[in-house]
Each structure stands twice: as C-alpha cells, then as structure tokens.
Amino acid sequence: KVDIGGQVLRHHPIRISVYSEAPKSLDIFAKAAIEKDTIYLGEGLTVRYYLYSKGGVVGEEIKKFPELKRFLKRFYNITDPRGSRERVTINGEMYIRSLIYAARLFPEKVGRAYIDPIQLRVQYRDARGGNSYQNLGLGFGLGLGFGADQLRSRDISSKRLEINVLPLPTE
Image (cartoon, rainbow, N blue to C red; front, side, top):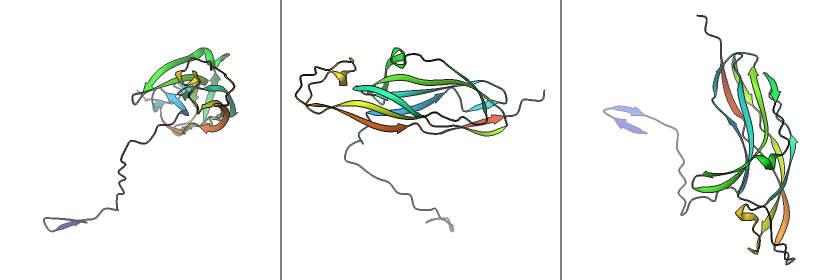
C-alpha cells in the first residue's frame, strides 16, 4: 500500500526469492521453436521440436506427438535426428541441440491457437565418476567397467506455445 499525495494505491503482494547463487540449469530439456507468434489466417508457420542436452544422451523416444489442433499439418521427414545435431550456447552454457520433430502448420481459424508440447523419454549416461567423455558431447565413453556411468531415463516435455491468428486484411 502506497500513499502518494493523498491517493492510496494498493497492489497484491509480490514475492521475491533471493538465492546465494544462480539456480543450476537443466542438463536435458525439450523446446518447441517457432519463427513468430502472430500470423495471418492461412499463413504458414514452421515448428521445430528440439532436444537440448549437455551430453551423455544415448537415445530418445517420442512418447506423445503434439496434436496441433486448429492447424493443417505437413510433417518434415527427419530420418536421423542425430544427423541434425549442433552446438549452441544458452545463458553462457554449452548444449547439444538435436532436431527431433518438425512440421509446417497452416492455421484454420482466426483467434488463439496452441503449439502442443512434445513428450519424450530420454536415455542418458549419468557420469558420476568423471570417466566419461559423454559430457563433452563427443558421443563416446571410456566404458572402463568401473560402474561410474549409469544408464538412466527421464520423461521430459516442451512447453505449450500460444499463437495469435489474425484475419486476412480486407484491402
């Protein structure tokens, strides 16, 4: 509550958390990427679903494909997701980005439309002993048999994105 020149302004409480250090970033996550979030009716939009990892991913499986309702869909043929790997930097941290799934979308109706999440099961090596080159993204481990690398799996999904579909201009 703030009193400014006799006028009282009220606002709901805002909670602020202060940490002694920055929160640790995720080692593996999925993300849907689009060029823009406002398009015209009938305009094409490409959505690409990526898997980001800091290394050690052995395999991935799509558990649930995005439904992408309210869109006409044309899917891209991605024969080898590992062939579309690249290194990217996010917030100063290095990740390996793999294209998992992609489609060209054409909205059918004016209004809000949603890019559904993709759900993945990811198998990865958990290098606890530090004897694996997987974390460097080189794609191989020493495999010395000391049990330091454990194969684990995790279910992840991307976030849902919102698209604003505008009517075609009349002019």
